[in-house]
Length: 411
Image (cartoon, rainbow, N blue to C red; front, side):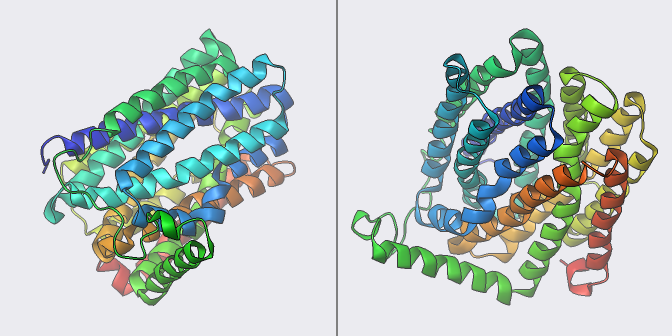
């Protein structure tokens, strides 16, 4: 499955990059709660942290398809590392505020929006088609391990140096990620800009011609997704499901732990680690060949179980019960993510993969932004545990709709 060392380097580099994302995410939301104690502000920051992919996802896909995908990943990691160093420096100058955090989260997310479509589009060039599901499992598993280890690192840093100095650690992770990714693809030919219209051509970028090419390429990607019935359903159900699932997961969880249960940052980081441990367990079993379901059935079953396991939150569990509940919930998340990436790779020609993965990112991260913002507003009036349970039920309905469509079950 592994061609030379390229897949290992990709897995390692993306793991460190996503580890930095995890520390940033946990540190940022906890910093906002420390500064403001505002549910609305926490929801707003979480929304802005995910909003750029919704606004710029089309162009991000064009960039990934037109430029060297490895270099796109390198640039994204380097820029995010530099931004990490900015937060403690600004705090030292006395300029840290909720408004500045909103701006910082937005710019950071623009750079992050390029990383994952470039990564997922690169995988088919490192492994043969029969091994693609297992390769995606390794990459997604390393992503999930980052969400397991990241909270532990964040918890340690929160207790040791506080929520501001924590970002120095995140910057170091991005730096090491950059070094590893530099060596991906050194001994094989990787895709780069193609054809006379490639945006990499400096004579075509920055002017009206470059803008027309970018829009033309984005429109071609949209046309492919809309005309391909399987891809269309894949993105629609993903978008709706993420709207109901991600807001509670990202915004309601720290609020539930800090304000409803009266616990500290280490407990929040601990729950995030439990979440990642559940995802790692699910990924490990997929790597071993279980469950033996087609990619389509795995995806749909995962959505149903993902929403259903939010139901017990209606009982407002204590922290001791929250741990196994979140573990079971997280176990089914890889069923969704791994099968979804593999389906997009199977259904999309290589020249269009960056755009389609960006559209997928718009469905996942973009709807997460909207969900986070609305969740923050609703939690001013709705008890946290009630929102968890009811929105989980609505997320489960997305999987049931998919099961009712025969062509999706056959994927």
